[in-house]
Length: 106
Image (cartoon, rainbow, N blue to C red; front, side, top):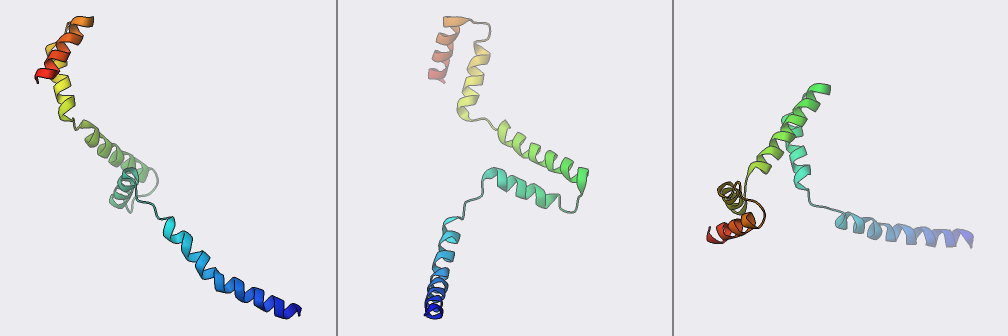
């Protein structure tokens, strides 16, 4: 009786194992973030380097990527910078009014 119960239980577990094993693999896939993509690209570029040389090259590569991304200004940022330069020297409400008029006219 015990061996029959054991055999049935074992078959039930083995029969259900593929169902439970396949479910989590399909739901755990995440898209790669921009930071992970930069890390991957820099790691590929620095392949073969070791120790401190690798760390320095990785750091320089990641800084170059982030500096290029941060230097790009949007059109709104360009307008703000232009208007701020025109209104330099003004203070308080006078600055706010001039800045507002400049941004509306630009």
